[in-house]
Length: 288
Ligand code: ADP
View 1 (cartoon, rainbow, N blue to C red):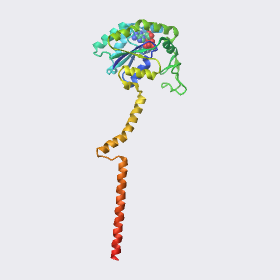
View 2: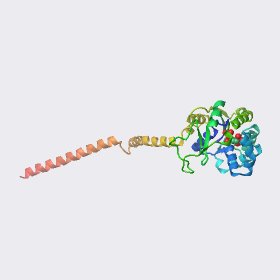
View 3: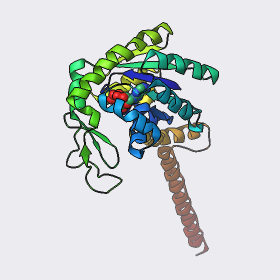
View 4: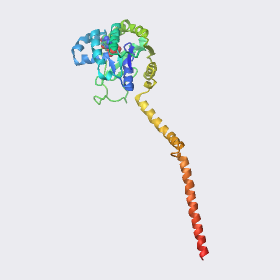
C-alpha cells in the first residue's frame, strides 16, 4: 500500500500516519520529521533547512527530493509506505510521479484530511511534544493526564515543549503557504483518480475509521489492542462450537450427552452387580 496523506498543518497527518503504521506495518515517511532530525543532528541538510522551517516556508525542493529518493529506496518500504507532508507543491508531486514510475511502484491512494481553518489554529496553538521521547500531546484535546504513561526514555513524566514553528506568526505563514502551494495538489490527484477526501474533525478514532473506509481497509479501523482482544474472544467462543462439530462428525459427544451416557453405564453396572448378588444369594439358599 503506497499512500499520500494530504492536509494542512495541524490536520492530523502525523497522528493518523502513526496509527496506520501500527496497524499495517508499513513505514511513515514524514519529511517534517526527517528535516527536524537533520536540524537536531546539525547535519549540512539541517543547516540548509533550518531557516525556512523556522519561518514557516517550504524547504528547497532539491533538498527534500534528495531525502525522499534515499528513503523510498530503503528495504522497509518494499511493502509500501505512508507519505506524510510530502509532496507539498506541484513540482514535488511531479517529481514523486517520475520517481515511483521509474521504480514501477505507483501510488495507490491519496487521502486529503479536511479540517476547518479555526480548528487548525486551535490545534497548533495547543500542540506540545515530549522533549525526550517525541510523543505528541495537545493541551486542549489530549493533555497528559495524571495517569498517563511515563516517558519511556526517562521513566519520568513527559517534559512538554512547543515546536519552534508552532508560534502564532509562523503558524499563520504555514497555513498561508499550504493554501498557496499545497492545496493545488487536491485537483492534481483528483484528476488522476487517486483522491479521497475525509472529514478529519472530531474524535481521533472516528477519523481513523473514516481513513480506513477511504482506503477500503475496514480492519485498519481497529486498534492493535482491540484486535487482539477480539481474536481472543472469537477463539473462546469457537470452542463449544468446535466440540459440537466434532460430535456431529462422530468423534466426540457434546459434554451433556457424555454425562447422560456415563450415568446410564453406571446405572447398568450397578443393576448388574445387584442382579449377580441376588443370584448368588438364591444359589446359597438352594444349597442349604
Ligand atoms: P506541518 O505539516 O505541521 O506544518 P511538518 O512537520 O510536516 O509540519 O513540517 C515542518 C516544516 O518542515 C514545514 O513548515 C517546512 O518548512 C518543512 N517541510 C516539511 N516537509 C516539506 C516538504 N515536503 N517540502 C518543503 N518543506 C517541507
